[in-house]
Image (cartoon, rainbow, N blue to C red):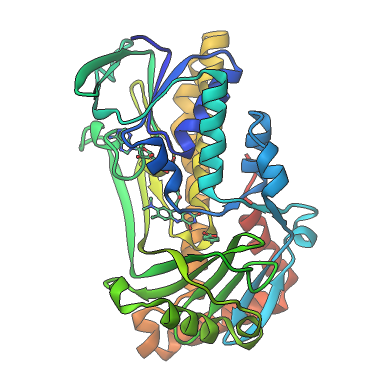
Length: 392
Ligand code: RFL
Ligand code: PHB
């Protein structure tokens, strides 16, 4: 089989890239190692930046998001029970975010691929990348036990943190930057109305908590836990009790408890691999970088990467220009590092670190910074500008 762009990974990065290329008349094949059901059931991100919403509009995969997504004009920052609103819309001159689950984005993109006949091959096993430094790279994989070969002009590595694309770049070329946090997030999904119409990020002396949602009848909550926490030690009631304490009395009073339909613990890390291109291989999304979820940037960075990448590939096919391809890594990384900074900073502002428990200075600094944000419009503007997403 032959295509122009072989896309490894059918998560949001790979599927969105495929639709952006399709609109420009560029052929691609997505190779995804899991089944469609598996990919669509993974509960992950929930907040889309203004620009990610615009990209979904651009590819015409926005109808259900427009119907079912919730536009949020602001969010709350709670500190030991006191709540301060960040007015995203007012502070940014009109920008908002869209609360619409990654599961739904993925379903919509898969539906579009099926309707438009852009190929997505699920359960592609043993994917391996070859001849990436030549003009004739190719990908091998197995489907239903039969070996296959996909010839292409370019390979887009959109296969997440654990994929094969990043390890295909020689170790002496790739430089990694990493920070692992000494805690994780325990997430719970329940079919109950949210406790507030906006998200609440809470810094509490017992640890961070977040009240989020997927719809007006489905809530998503998180609490900070030790990195080695065991789900078995967290029955639903204990999680609801902890949320009520950490989110403060007002949220607790309007919180509806219910049985969890999903519960998981995720570690928090910041990670960037440089460069994001090696020969004819491009990395995009989690394959190249990970952010702690505090800033809600993971999915949004996947979107900005594939925007830059699609522009580079479109210029190559339309004008024969390699300039965009040459510039891709530096352009994507410039935005990635700013989102890394914001996610790292927001995590530091809102979480309890083992050393701030003993280090009274660290805790005072955190309080001073929150006080500053609460009292300064300039500081709030910085938070809002980053939260709705830097332009691209
Ligand atoms: P994805 O979504 O991981 O998709 C990669 C796809 O590649 C497939 N794959 C392979 N396919 C073929 N061959 C191989 N060898 C392959 N190896 C992997 C995988 O099956 C998968 O379908 O990456 P993408 O597209 O870059 O999208 C990025 C986002 O998914 C990610 O940034 C966010 O979901 C991060 N994230 C969260 N972000 C938030 O903003 N808020 C959250 O609450 C949030 N929760 C999460 C998350 C990421 C998680 N991961 C990756 C462990 C919770 C979790 C558990
Ligand atoms: C979510 O709803 O899953 C969510 C929302 C905001 C975040 C992280 C996760 O910062």
